[in-house]
Image 1 (cartoon, rainbow, N blue to C red):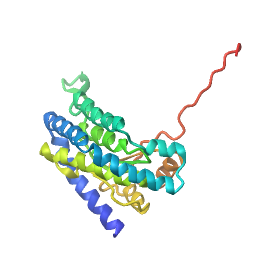
Image 2 (image 1 turned 90 degrees about the horizontal axis):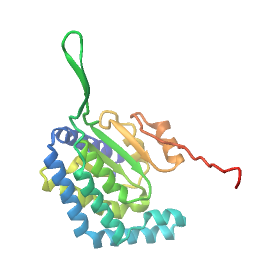
Image 3 (image 1 turned 60 degrees about the vertical axis):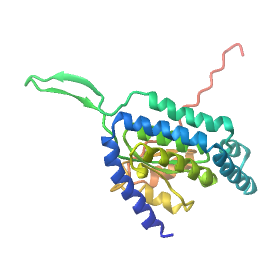
Image 4 (image 1 turned 45 degrees about the vertical axis):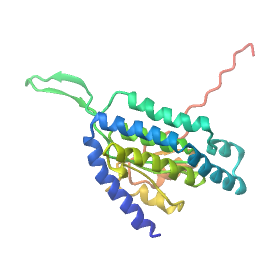
Length: 238
């Protein structure tokens, strides 16, 4: 596979899809989300089988217990993915929402209106449920998404992605509005974060090392959390 050519094709398709998603009606977006939830429930056995292969390979490769726990799906967690999609469908559509409207001395009314970002690249590690969660939030907000999950979850991510894309198609929306990178080659991430012509923002979700690397090398704006706040309070009487 020519990684550069592949990533440019993914980016170009996402850019085209983002224009359609920005115009998509609330009803169509909600219809897609509900269809995705239905597909995930229908494909529960396939998702769990793919995940079992991912877990077996990760265990053989010496993945630590905490990462294995994050990687492992159950019937309950698959159902939680479907419920999450349905919950997002019930949320108000943020696109077009207006606030802070004020009349200027000239008589012109000025305010803020929420619009989609365009193409959102999301890079995450061993949690396959993030594939459904990220797809849902990007879809509801009228964006296209390029998702790059951890190599440990490749098989499960691909099955979940097929459920997502079938849901988009069922609602008459472009399947390329959500694409999961189908290679574990790290070079793909390098291209994803340096394609401002195709990608509008990158959201890394993972450990400090991942976020530092993305922030250092990206040519696309990055929404990051890095260290966060970890405070401990101990009372004098303890």
